[in-house]
Image (tube, rainbow, N blue to C red; front, side, top):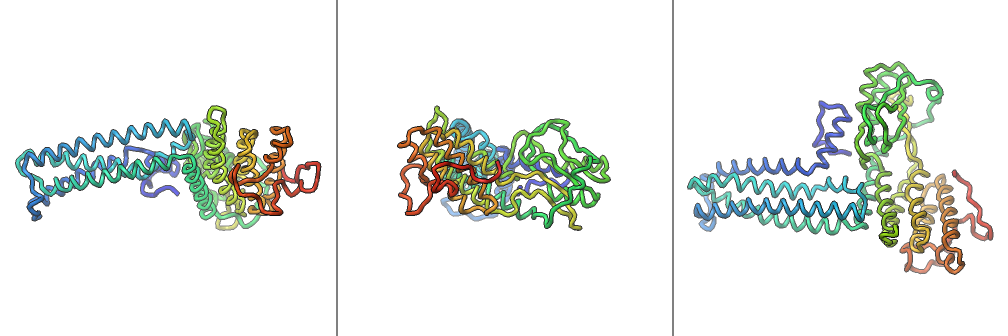
Length: 457
């Protein structure tokens, strides 16, 4: 889930997680490695200069070599400044039109780091060879390599500009968030299999033997669930997390209740398996991907922006994520067993109702007066009704009921209300519905009085 390339085995799991997070989001680490690589290649080039026979066209005078290498080094410094300027503009644009939460993920982009690393490597390579050129021994091979590197760097710069011109459109961000959220959900299913049976509630009704307290305030970014299960199984205890990934905890607040013969050393090890940071991250939190898409949608629906089409595009990807989540049988199962089959860990998890409410409630409220939003949201909910597991359908029917009530309140005129109650996958302008298509929930068809469908409130 997190690149093991950055892992430090001598740290606790939470400290290692924080280190990996910092390295993935830093804009200096990979360019620094590029600088070191450039210096190393320069040393290798100086060793090869007298051992490689070059064509006549690859030989240069001392003055020409010095001028070329000086120009290359200066150009790379300028290109690094250009990339930094573009990055600042991207941050301003993205925080103003998208969501500030998205920027945490944008910092991880590998192409951006590769471009900066290539520029710093070329600059360091050319600068290191300048001393050789000034001594009268011309590094002909190095000058040629520097020229080729400049060409490659320009191509990378064009790819960088093309990537972010397209990747920062709202629809592209929505697609990336949906893909990331579904990938995290699949990883959670694969790495944390559901318990095979229901757990005994004896340990829940009793007083905890040990309360593990938070050593700092912040958001829970990740939990080492497998490590907690191993620890609990070895100590023959049951760990009950009080918060889920994404929750904000305060200093001294209870993180975990431990039932059984636990020791203070166990508390320290348990605390080291829960990563707490300044803000949420998507690594174990698919709801954070939904949160970012909803933020973009409701920002587009604000009176200052008034762009319901962008919100409609976000609903496309929100619907795809909700459809996948609603089809998972393991959703909401927070019990984990040890090798002996006994429940060793209980984690509060989001249910289908939680994900559905997160994905549609705010958009329904902020887009209540928009025909596009009402029609596209209805199409999303009708698709979900037919795609999710039967146990999850009552929650969808309730959202359809709430959408009907919102439409009735927002459009008192029947002529406006009628088109607002039509399902349209494009918001406005989609194809006509086929014969027999329902625009209202199954529970309201054929009845002049709307009834709230059965289901959790």
